[in-house]
Image 1 (tube, rainbow, N blue to C red):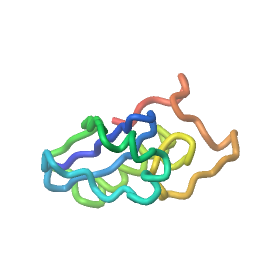
Image 2: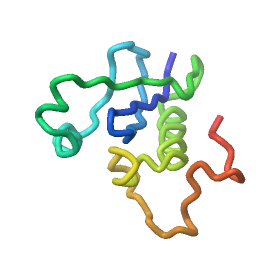
Image 3: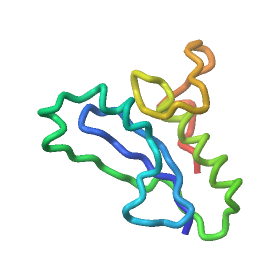
Image 4: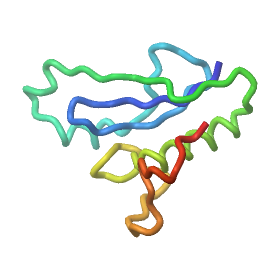
Length: 109
């Protein structure tokens, strides 16, 4: 099963990733240095993150999974540094080009 997942950190920021192997222990490669800047040494001593599967497929190609991952990154705006840790695709801060959690914008399926 191939999946797209969302990781939520204690500060509420998120990371959207994909896993082509469906490993329960896979959290991809969010930039550790970027995440470390948001937490004190003390906060890092007791640290809980949540991983949610947003989408899964047993038949999608790797390319289709990658496209779905980008859809979710854009939907949740996890590439916006104020919201998440995805660094790609580049976040566009123009309000008319955004639409995260908009009632008129459906969740990717």
